[in-house]
Amino acid sequence: MRRHFIPWLGAVGLVIGPSPALAQSFLTYHCGDGLEFVVAFVEGDRSAHVQLDGKAMSLPRRFSPSGSRYTKGDVTLRITKTMTTLRRGKRLSECTAT
Image 1 (cartoon, rainbow, N blue to C red):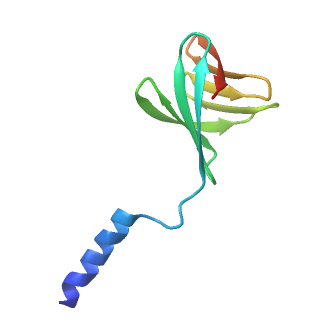
Image 2 (tube, rainbow, N blue to C red):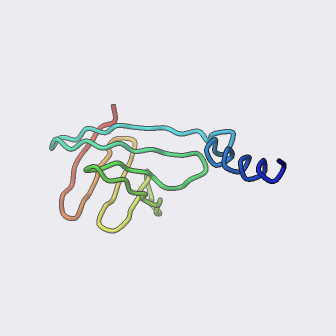
């Protein structure tokens, strides 16, 4: 009986997950050109987790002299006190959080 209990206990731990949960904040952005995306910030993680065009991506935080900048490949999210922009390749969108 004990042999069956240990694997079952491990499976329950995988389903339940770690505890306590980390603090998260989600922001939905609406841009002047009609683009919408969601960004999640997780406590202790220096990346911005972006849901864009039906795809999830993590943008690591990069050095920025003002505000915050997150970049991976040709996608850059820049957040300052006065403006938020998302650049995808040559396309630049000015956005506001709601």
